[in-house]
Image (tube, rainbow, N blue to C red; front, side):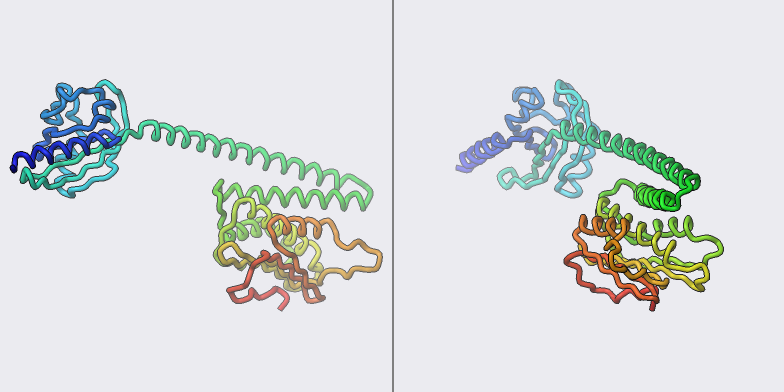
Length: 353
């Protein structure tokens, strides 16, 4: 009766093994092959007559005496009893070079009174090849983007220089003003592009660090040695997509340039501009405050807004934000607020308080 039960158990075990889609082996404690799945025979192109009852390392005249396989079965499995996704790159007999994930588990066979090892093979050669190809393409893309960014930066500098040369050579004050405005805006785009390049091609940008570096560069290029103006960036933690960071950078650049150029008279004693940023998950608020002379009042019949204001409104609209301006003889504060923002941090002190 016991022998009959053993035969039934063995038949059932072989049937289960044959249903496994991946190459699969059942080994005894001495690593002799008890059973193999049909997928094992098909994938490794070897027949049952050369497999059943053979020692694993003796298969194909010793071709399966693989160092990585020995490491798995002789050292790792006895110690841990389970091993998953043990990656092996190896030249296998008849099928060539393959990348395999090996999964092994030690189980106890009550009918035999001895442990067995279940060993499954997953061929990930094509997957690893595709991953390496994709990695190579991504690296190539990064190189091309870096080269393109470098060329754009050079082109913007050339355009800005030409505009400035033209502005100095023309006699019309109005034309000179237009050329200088164009020069400033080209330089603002160049500054944003330069500092985004510095943080790399990542999909997410740390806003505080990005704005600090941007404002530092802008202040250094605009504030003269004889002007006592301080620019501070007060920013909490927050990340933004690269496209959102472009819009934020252009807005800050436009507002900061306007403050540094127009908010302070030459005799202003202590000018200060504060760039503030606070964020909670995807919600955020950006502000630029100065303690200058304030924006000029609109007179009847004058244009409602200049080019700079129109640009800021357009950029804010692109990132689903609204623009609020508060101005007085003690200074100006411009707030760019994401539509769903609710402040969770103490309000950043404005420069004109």
